[in-house]
Length: 276
Image (cartoon, rainbow, N blue to C red; front, side):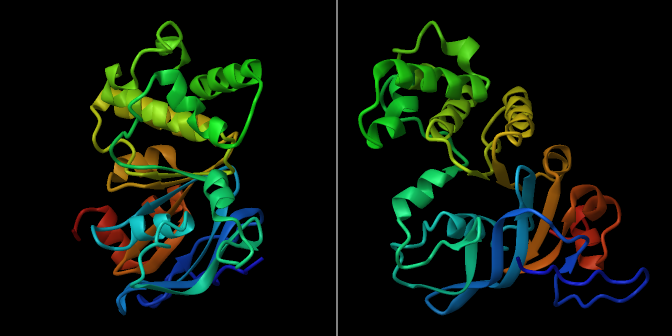
């Protein structure tokens, strides 16, 4: 496992060009090692190294265009079809390079699920939305499929709200319910990691609180990585926070430490709103 960067001594002037770590993880699910990504030669991520702890919520924060969503998509290999993208370094899932030639990309995306900013339920029933990935995996006894759909909806805190209308269109649900349905659809195939790209930014405050409660509850089952512009949300739901700026990792550590005792002035300026 990659060793974390050394911790700066109190009062020391840590370089603004290097990420500051508050800790060393002992059990990581994802290891990002000197990872860089460029679009048509223009750098988007530069030499990122961090460990994402297993069964914890890690938040990526930073200004627009800093590379948060780019990094999230790299973990899911969503850049594969963009011929202008070049990569260096590596990302490992449970010790295995996700870009290894023999790796099955479909299996990777089953293990690393992703939920986007806007809910995207399929034009089918609530039940069939959740069962969609299960059907792609092959034949499954109906009883087992029914049990898995119920389990996924319960895990997404949606079962009680929809159990009597499973065969109605998913589009009849509210925006917050649709987002939890998408999470249930992702959970149904039993991923190891759930990537969340601004999952509540399009929702009302009550739906947002339900999504945040769901995020906190899910970490007992899997590892979560959250991209958010909302500092309060990151502070409420995450165990660890990584601050990115200009495609670089500036600071990374336990959320309480990053928010209350940041090591770099750049981090403090962003968290306190003195930098857009």
